[in-house]
Length: 262
Image (cartoon, rainbow, N blue to C red; front, side, top):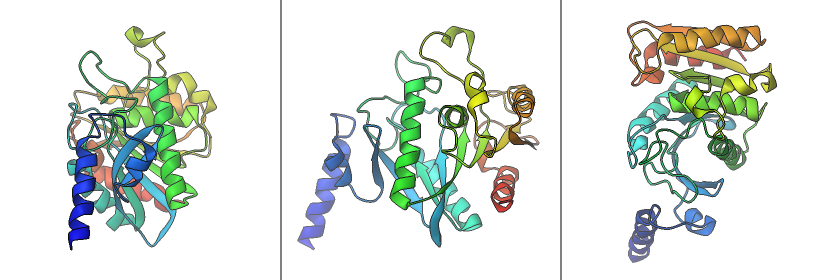
């Protein structure tokens, strides 16, 4: 009993220090199965395992205030997707959220920076995280679900690292580089779409009442995706706003159908 208490205290103290100092891989490994070290960051996750780990589903959140416990919101969604698909499903907390570190990157939105979701270095870090999860579960197939900034980064990643992701659901994203972001190590899916693997399946999801990522941001880019020969489908969620767009019944059903088409 004493040993268990000491282990818990050790994990708790290391967890508290994640945002206070740089955490090493060995420190991260000591935190247990809910943490994975990737791209120089110690990332907290919540995993719901299926019968087989050959195919994993990774859920990536969007921009929240620095320090938000994103896993509190996305872990239940990961469990829902696991129950509906029986796939091992992993919700991740990006740097600066829940108990994930900030060794190299701060939260997507923090003081002085509006958003990192267009930053090429950050997106490549996300690719390392996906690879680390593939290695951890010895998976060969990845379904990626991204909301808002998570959708923007995931889409761009399929152009930067073709073939890394086999199925991708993009809810409430944006896919063009804004004029004020150009020339600042920024990249969007539109910049790299010609590199995307034509075998990857794309699901573009938009809400008709979304005022943050307006419907035309998705519908216009869907036309670009089709023009570039991508295997893409468009899903409209009637009356849905930006928040929790990825969690709506319409979105969940469309994601399940995309997976079952294999």
